[in-house]
Length: 373
Image (cartoon, rainbow, N blue to C red):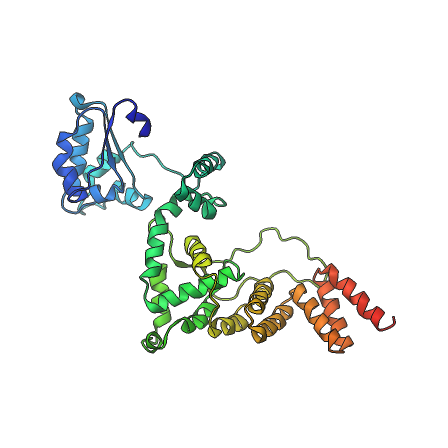
């Protein structure tokens, strides 16, 4: 569109007093060398009162030789395009017949994911000062869904800021979990148990028996770009797992039960706005009871230690070691050695070595040497 400005084309985006009304009342004024920009075209073609008339007026404009050249450019999410182009069952009303005629043979599909060339061009725009693009690329560069991020980010933030107290508590528990080192897949039980600590007394007393179901349903509603603030997902198994480091090292188990994923934009927002906040006690308790991934537990151990939650750090380290985290085992070995329990320290060091911690072999040798062996 911008390239047409140099050729003295004009741009018209009908939106006042409403999009549908502006288009219907003013389309007959459009002259040659005009771009008619119908952003979110469902607001025009899908209007229950005048959508058919707008489609007919656009059809007439495109066929009027005296007003050529003209470019009518609109955007539609796939679900709307499918609705407007589908044939109704026999005997049923056909409210989108004119829209179907208009769109037939005139739709271009934009890929869900941008490729390397497009992302390189986007990065160049970001480097030249496009802050909106730069912000989107921090989240979408890895998967290429830049359009979805740009479309959904403002609405995701609004949904968080205007969420019910219970839904907001779930989101903040998820934000804290991600920024403190828990993986993408957040267990349902963890979020549900952690959330009450994020509520003040008044909001907690207002909770009903089905508060969790209502809150999850609220957060599952998608925004533009097909994103949801917190959506249920499935942990994907490793397609080609590498051989274990040793015979004793078992493959990593997938999370048990339902898991949820926080929207990337809200995760980034939480890292910035909550970076100085310490989660409530319910968060640490839920993590200790519900998190099972050894690396997640190890990261939470460090987070608790850094925030002087030393008792939780100790219990999370024990749980991390129980689930196979070599660093936690090695650390516990050092603690038992200092306490004078050489037998337990040696057993933990050996377990850490079996789980791939080569430094534990050095520790094991030091324990043996200190014992005179």
